[in-house]
Length: 144
Image 1 (cartoon, rainbow, N blue to C red):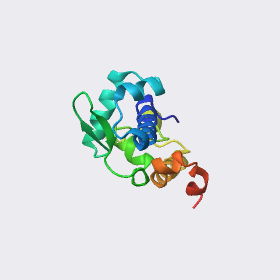
Image 2 (image 1 turned 135 degrees about the vertical axis):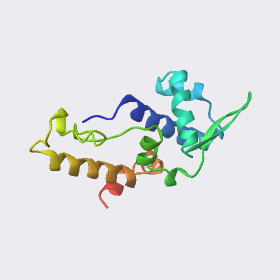
Image 3 (image 1 turned 180 degrees about the horizontal axis):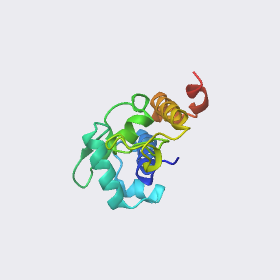
Image 4 (image 1 turned 90 degrees about the vertical axis):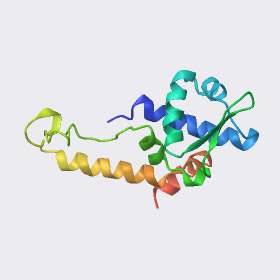
């Protein structure tokens, strides 16, 4: 199971934004792109989704940029992944077609295990905020 580039880059970009907006207020996509080695055009797509998802606000113009829409402590990793329409799951099942794992007609023998794992991953990401990651509180927060 793997988080796609879209999800990973969205999390990286918002961590960068949270860190550097503390120092300078608004942060441009060019700055984030340079620090995180992500293309500006890809960041534009991600930030449009995150803006619609209520995670960031934008100011246009020469002194413009982005900032978090609320405190870093109030933005979970799960909300970032959800905003960029990323689905994390450990099964190959498609609920839309009611197909089983890996395209089979029935569930695989480990189906319930993978569903439980997916639930734990979502729960974990919902407990972790941007601030937790930036402050190095990842292990203690996740273990609560």
